[in-house]
Length: 164
Image (tube, rainbow, N blue to C red; front, side, top):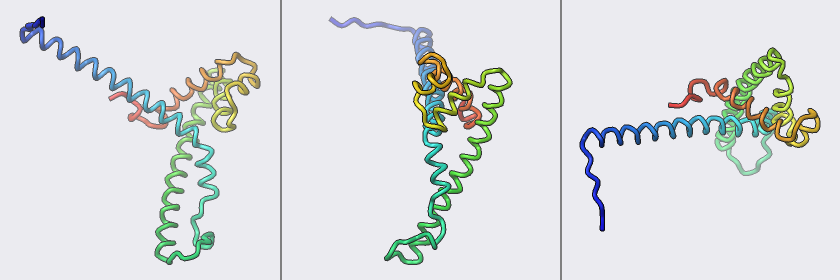
């Protein structure tokens, strides 16, 4: 047998407002988590992007592809150049913001936290290798790197890192 719940308008309004509020809280948490994840992913590919900037083919003399028309070569080169410029802009922005984090950590006497971040993302070391090198607990480098990423995220993304 089914039971039917009867609500008056005021009760229904309270339930709807609570549901909407909970939905908004979940969306804000998701957006904040997404920007943290975006920052993590951005830092994971930083070294590869630096290689792209350094080694990408952006001049006609570098092309050794047979059978491409001059127009096709021009389109290809323009595409690579645009990618290279966007990559240069973003890596320069990241460099400035990472320098800010380094300076903050030094002022606060927390250099090892920045050093763990640098070893992980720029040197490609594992958390275990970092723990050994910095003579700390096995979970400490992961915690330090996560803390730096949380602080770095709004520096990189600005207001976009804020929940909606």
